[in-house]
Image (tube, rainbow, N blue to C red; front, side):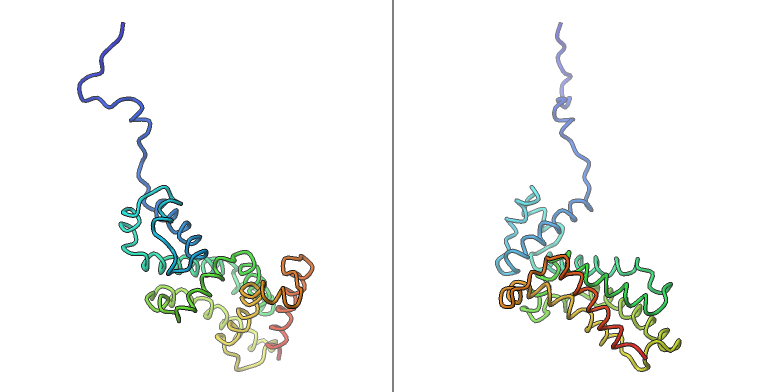
Length: 222
């Protein structure tokens, strides 16, 4: 004997297909797909259609969350800068002896750039835009103050203890650390080809990591 579903009842398959909406997960998925698209195509060449395809969603949904391709790009920048800054805060530099703190910060910066090529590529792309979209984000400027504050505290503590020289500027030291770590990733293909350097070689990577640590510490020493 078969039973007829009550009028207006939802068929069982439709119930199984129903999903609970998760806005944060949707936004995160879109951001991750957008990173790949912007890295590969740049801002001008990136297509919202392609990002929608990557996330199995619609352009309408992307515009609902981010309003425009340019705003999505700004939020990608905020995410990438936020990732490195939030991880830095877990290093607990204030709990370390100044020289150990500097070494940990340098090693972290080296490793983060080495493992996050997409971050380096998008920053290169943003520099081609003369920082136009970074200027639109007060959040990026605010979150990047944290590394300078942590570094300034280390430098002052080191100077008070007589292990670092006086008068060091946190911004200058941050630039010194970032420049080497960034350049070896951003220019690995041209530099590597011209000078026949294999930047992925573990021994070379370890040598460079130690070299930048020693260079910074020798620059800071009293």
